[in-house]
Length: 161
Image (cartoon, rainbow, N blue to C red):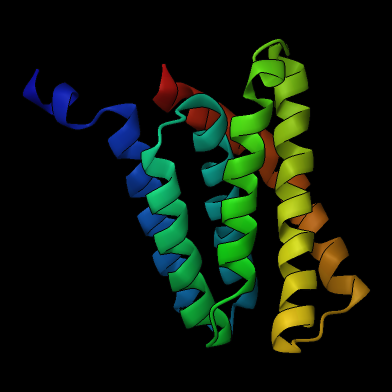
Protein backbone atom coordinates (compact mmCIF):
# COMPACT_ATOMS: atom_id res chain seq x y z
CA UNK A 1 0.00 0.00 0.00
CA UNK A 2 2.82 2.39 0.88
CA UNK A 3 4.60 1.44 -2.33
CA UNK A 4 1.59 2.54 -4.38
CA UNK A 5 1.63 5.97 -2.74
CA UNK A 6 5.36 6.39 -3.37
CA UNK A 7 5.32 5.25 -6.99
CA UNK A 8 2.64 7.54 -8.35
CA UNK A 9 2.50 8.05 -12.13
CA UNK A 10 4.31 11.38 -11.63
CA UNK A 11 7.22 9.63 -9.89
CA UNK A 12 7.30 6.78 -12.42
CA UNK A 13 7.39 9.18 -15.37
CA UNK A 14 10.26 11.03 -13.72
CA UNK A 15 12.09 7.74 -13.16
CA UNK A 16 11.67 6.90 -16.86
CA UNK A 17 12.98 10.35 -17.76
CA UNK A 18 16.02 9.93 -15.49
CA UNK A 19 16.79 6.43 -16.79
CA UNK A 20 16.39 7.32 -20.47
CA UNK A 21 18.38 10.52 -19.94
CA UNK A 22 21.18 8.52 -18.32
CA UNK A 23 21.38 6.05 -21.19
CA UNK A 24 21.17 8.88 -23.74
CA UNK A 25 24.14 10.82 -22.40
CA UNK A 26 26.34 7.75 -21.86
CA UNK A 27 27.58 7.10 -25.35
CA UNK A 28 27.81 3.51 -26.42
CA UNK A 29 30.06 3.83 -29.44
CA UNK A 30 29.61 0.25 -30.62
CA UNK A 31 25.82 0.41 -30.35
CA UNK A 32 25.00 4.02 -31.21
CA UNK A 33 21.36 3.18 -31.97
CA UNK A 34 20.82 2.46 -28.25
CA UNK A 35 21.56 6.12 -27.53
CA UNK A 36 19.18 7.23 -30.26
CA UNK A 37 16.42 4.90 -29.05
CA UNK A 38 16.65 6.18 -25.48
CA UNK A 39 16.96 9.76 -26.75
CA UNK A 40 13.64 9.30 -28.54
CA UNK A 41 12.09 7.48 -25.55
CA UNK A 42 13.13 10.43 -23.37
CA UNK A 43 11.44 12.90 -25.70
CA UNK A 44 8.37 10.70 -26.13
CA UNK A 45 7.98 10.35 -22.36
CA UNK A 46 8.43 14.10 -21.92
CA UNK A 47 5.73 14.88 -24.50
CA UNK A 48 3.38 12.26 -23.01
CA UNK A 49 4.10 13.60 -19.54
CA UNK A 50 3.27 17.10 -20.78
CA UNK A 51 -0.01 16.01 -22.35
CA UNK A 52 -1.37 13.78 -19.61
CA UNK A 53 0.34 14.85 -16.37
CA UNK A 54 0.78 18.59 -16.92
CA UNK A 55 1.97 20.50 -13.88
CA UNK A 56 3.88 23.75 -13.56
CA UNK A 57 6.85 21.76 -12.29
CA UNK A 58 7.36 20.74 -15.94
CA UNK A 59 8.88 24.17 -16.55
CA UNK A 60 11.58 23.34 -14.01
CA UNK A 61 11.97 19.78 -15.31
CA UNK A 62 12.18 21.02 -18.92
CA UNK A 63 14.67 23.70 -17.91
CA UNK A 64 16.92 21.25 -16.05
CA UNK A 65 16.81 18.49 -18.67
CA UNK A 66 17.22 21.02 -21.47
CA UNK A 67 20.38 22.41 -19.93
CA UNK A 68 21.74 18.97 -19.04
CA UNK A 69 21.10 17.53 -22.51
CA UNK A 70 22.74 20.57 -24.08
CA UNK A 71 25.79 20.33 -21.83
CA UNK A 72 26.27 16.57 -22.13
CA UNK A 73 25.44 16.15 -25.83
CA UNK A 74 26.66 19.33 -27.51
CA UNK A 75 28.76 21.04 -24.84
CA UNK A 76 26.87 24.33 -25.17
CA UNK A 77 23.51 25.50 -23.91
CA UNK A 78 20.95 26.13 -26.60
CA UNK A 79 18.88 23.79 -28.72
CA UNK A 80 17.31 21.43 -26.16
CA UNK A 81 16.58 24.16 -23.65
CA UNK A 82 14.91 26.39 -26.22
CA UNK A 83 12.91 23.54 -27.71
CA UNK A 84 11.63 22.22 -24.35
CA UNK A 85 10.60 25.65 -23.09
CA UNK A 86 8.87 26.55 -26.37
CA UNK A 87 7.03 23.21 -26.28
CA UNK A 88 5.79 23.78 -22.73
CA UNK A 89 4.73 27.36 -23.51
CA UNK A 90 2.87 26.23 -26.65
CA UNK A 91 1.15 23.49 -24.69
CA UNK A 92 -0.07 25.93 -22.04
CA UNK A 93 -1.56 28.08 -24.81
CA UNK A 94 -3.14 25.18 -26.72
CA UNK A 95 -4.23 22.83 -23.92
CA UNK A 96 -7.90 23.86 -24.06
CA UNK A 97 -7.97 22.71 -27.70
CA UNK A 98 -5.99 19.56 -27.00
CA UNK A 99 -8.48 18.46 -24.34
CA UNK A 100 -11.11 18.17 -27.09
CA UNK A 101 -9.16 15.51 -29.00
CA UNK A 102 -9.91 11.80 -28.75
CA UNK A 103 -7.22 9.27 -27.86
CA UNK A 104 -6.26 8.49 -31.47
CA UNK A 105 -5.91 12.18 -32.29
CA UNK A 106 -3.79 12.68 -29.18
CA UNK A 107 -1.55 9.78 -30.22
CA UNK A 108 -1.05 11.33 -33.65
CA UNK A 109 -0.44 14.72 -32.03
CA UNK A 110 2.17 13.18 -29.73
CA UNK A 111 3.89 11.55 -32.71
CA UNK A 112 3.90 14.77 -34.74
CA UNK A 113 5.02 16.81 -31.72
CA UNK A 114 7.81 14.34 -31.00
CA UNK A 115 9.16 14.59 -34.53
CA UNK A 116 8.82 18.37 -34.62
CA UNK A 117 10.82 18.54 -31.40
CA UNK A 118 13.54 16.23 -32.72
CA UNK A 119 13.84 18.13 -36.00
CA UNK A 120 13.72 21.55 -34.34
CA UNK A 121 16.52 20.49 -31.97
CA UNK A 122 18.61 19.58 -35.00
CA UNK A 123 17.82 22.90 -36.67
CA UNK A 124 18.56 24.91 -33.51
CA UNK A 125 21.80 22.96 -33.01
CA UNK A 126 22.76 23.91 -36.56
CA UNK A 127 21.79 27.56 -36.18
CA UNK A 128 23.12 28.14 -32.67
CA UNK A 129 26.00 25.70 -32.32
CA UNK A 130 27.06 25.02 -35.96
CA UNK A 131 26.39 21.30 -35.57
CA UNK A 132 25.60 19.76 -38.91
CA UNK A 133 22.99 17.11 -39.52
CA UNK A 134 21.95 15.22 -42.59
CA UNK A 135 18.68 14.08 -44.08
CA UNK A 136 19.44 10.46 -43.16
CA UNK A 137 19.53 11.42 -39.48
CA UNK A 138 16.08 13.02 -39.73
CA UNK A 139 14.67 9.94 -41.48
CA UNK A 140 16.27 7.71 -38.84
CA UNK A 141 14.61 9.71 -36.04
CA UNK A 142 11.22 9.53 -37.74
CA UNK A 143 11.44 5.77 -38.40
CA UNK A 144 12.62 4.93 -34.88
CA UNK A 145 9.97 7.17 -33.31
CA UNK A 146 7.32 5.49 -35.46
CA UNK A 147 8.48 2.05 -34.34
CA UNK A 148 8.62 3.07 -30.67
CA UNK A 149 5.33 5.00 -30.62
CA UNK A 150 2.77 2.24 -30.03
CA UNK A 151 4.70 0.17 -27.46
CA UNK A 152 5.78 3.30 -25.59
CA UNK A 153 2.27 4.74 -25.50
CA UNK A 154 0.97 1.38 -24.30
CA UNK A 155 3.46 1.27 -21.41
CA UNK A 156 2.94 4.94 -20.55
CA UNK A 157 -0.85 4.47 -20.56
CA UNK A 158 -0.49 1.48 -18.23
CA UNK A 159 1.60 3.57 -15.85
CA UNK A 160 -0.88 6.42 -16.05
CA UNK A 161 -3.87 4.20 -15.18
